[in-house]
Image: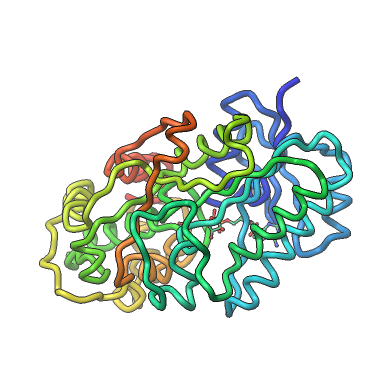
Length: 353
Ligand SMILES: NC(=O)c1ccc[n+]([C@@H]2O[C@H](COP(=O)([O-])OP(=O)(O)OC[C@H]3O[C@@H](n4cnc5c(N)ncnc54)[C@H](OP(=O)(O)O)[C@@H]3O)[C@@H](O)[C@H]2O)c1
C-alpha cells in the first residue's frame, strides 16, 4: 500500500512543492486548502477551512492519513491574532484526524522567525548565527511556538511522532500565495527590463553585504518526506536551507544576468519595492498583453511587502544544517540555481516574459 499523506496548505509554496514531490515518490496525496489545487497531477483536492472544525471533520471523514503535513498559515493583523488563528488551525486539523489509528507522523513547517521573533518583533532581540535547533525560544508571542506546543500536546495524547521544519525565505514555484520572494523578484526584474528602470537591490545594507541563505521549496519538500519516514528523525526540529550561503551583492548580479539587466549601484539604504512598484499594476497589465502572458494581476504574483520585510532586515540570518545531515539528510542545492530554475519555469509557463 502506498503511504497516504494529507497536505494541509497544498496550494501554497511549501504545500504545492511537497505534494508534487510525494506524488513523484508514489504516495497517495490529499491536498487540503480553502481553494485546493485542481491542476496538481496525482493530488486529490480537499476543500475545507481549517478554522471550521465541523466542516473539516466531514471533509476528512474517510481520509485516514498515515502522514499529515501542516504547511498552512493565514496572515493576521497582529501576532496575538496570528497565535489564535494559526494555533486553532493546527488544533482543528489534528482534532479532525485524531481518532485515526493509521496516523504515524505529523510534520509542521514553521520558519526562521523561530530564532529572531515574529514580524512585529524581528530586530528586537539579539540573534546568534548560525541558528541552531536547540537555541531557546525568544520571549515574545510567536505563532510558531503556539503551533509547536499544540503539536507536541497532540502527539503525546495520540501517540504519533512529529517533526518541525524551520526554513529561511523559501524560493519556489507558487502563484497567488502570500510570501514568495522568487516570483516577486522575477516580476520586479521583468518590469525593470521592460521600462528601463534601474534594477536596484531594495534591501538593507546588512542584507546586501552580510551572509544570507534561502531554501529551495523542492529541498524543503525532500526534508519533510525524509523526516516523516526516518525513525532517527522523529520528534525533532530541523533547520532546512539549501546548504550554501551567499551575499546579496553577489546574488543580485546573477539575477540581473538572468534578465539581461545591468546591476544598478546600491544606494546604501533600503528602497522598498512597495514604494518603487507603486505604479506596477498597469505596467504589468501591459507586459501581460504585449507578451501574451497568463492574465495574472501584479498584486497576485508579487507580495512586495514580504520581500521588503526579508531583504530589509538589519541583522544577519543563516542556519546550521548539520543536525539533519548527521542523521542522513544530504540533499543540497546551489542558491543561484534555485532562482534560475524558478525563472525558467515561470517563463515556460508564461507567467513572466
Ligand atoms: N514563504 C516563505 O518564504 C516562508 C519562509 C519561511 C517560513 N515560511 C512558513 O512556512 C509555512 C507555510 O507557508 P507558505 O509560505 O507555504 O504559505 P502559503 O504559500 O501562503 O500557503 C498557505 C496555504 O495554506 C492554505 N490556507 C490558508 N488558510 C487556510 C484555511 N483557513 N483553511 C485551509 N487552508 C488554508 C492556503 O490555501 P487557501 O488560501 O486556498 O486556503 C495555502 O494552500 C508558514 O508557517 C510560513 O510562515 C514561509
